[in-house]
Image 1 (cartoon, rainbow, N blue to C red):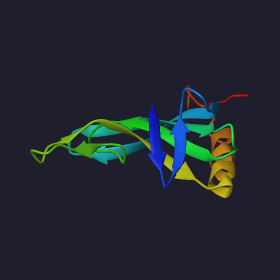
Image 2: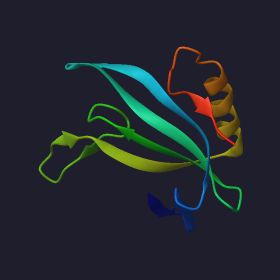
Image 3: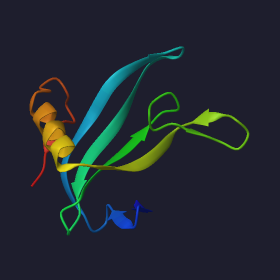
Length: 102
């Protein structure tokens, strides 16, 4: 996925993934839903999260018809947020998807 935000280009094809995890269970009217989030670092050292989730997660999106559907997004984060994210990743032993890369 590729996106330009505030003049910076974030691209999962050219960035390095630093970790991935299956994130929190969100209680909804349809039961429990989850989303997958990965942390990336660009060649210039900028950090971002790439996430994919069901309609009732923070990655869900609205259609022009007003329907909430599954979605994906890129969100830039500060180095401090990236460090915290990696620290939390190390503390999630029950997540079979959680792993730190490179």
